[in-house]
Image 1 (cartoon, rainbow, N blue to C red):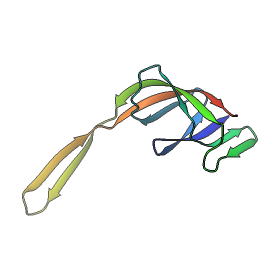
Image 2: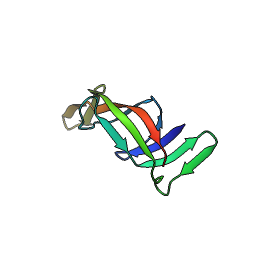
Image 3: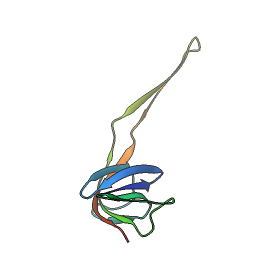
Image 4: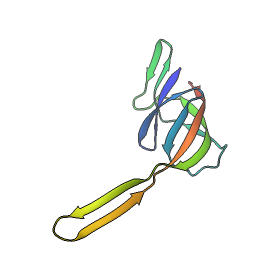
Length: 104
């Protein structure tokens, strides 16, 4: 059984006990979150597709950890103008573990 969820503007495939890396959530470690924006639920040979979301379907997850990704270096350069800028960015992510998929 799996579900496709939409969370913070992005879509993820959620299976039981799967670890999903999403954009940073302001939640404590160990806190339970319910995601009700379920786009599709597949239970073996039966598939429920929402319009746009499946009614009554909820994905329950637990917040694991929040961390920063590797640094991305951005270089700006304009020729013949003596213009050079270096900017670094580290995106913050949160790992959530799917505990249950509930279909109403």
